[in-house]
Image (cartoon, rainbow, N blue to C red; front, side, top):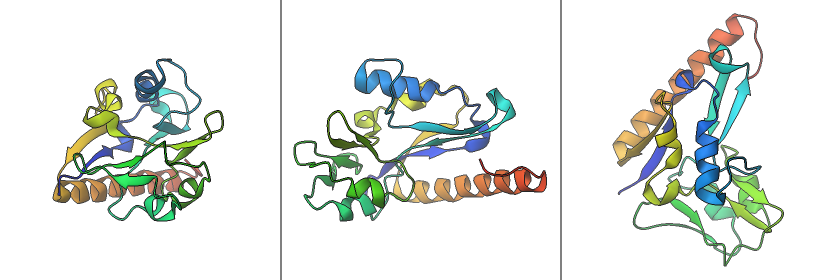
Length: 169
């Protein structure tokens, strides 16, 4: 399997949103987009808060793919990424509801679902992130080891925030 995905390291993210800008430029040609395929959520300015870039995790068994009644979502054989065929999408939003990471979106102007497409194998968010908070990974084993590492780091941040009496992200 040639699975490729993005790995997120939350403690390295300072909330600059350069990844969002790069994504927007790649997909819309605009610096500011109301519907980026990666979105930084969190609180606090700069490095003083907690920030988490949220994007498609390219699930092994993607719930969005299973939820799509028109089979508009499939796995691309070249990159093993999950993609949407916009010619088949009917805008029902079942995929948006099914996404476990909240990374699917819906464009009301186009009436279509959207998600990270890994920029056809050259993710611009990775290039824009000079802190290394977003890394492009290849390989099945690497995918799982990095996901476990990211989950562990995320849990550590959540626990430390809870110990400090802070709530939420």
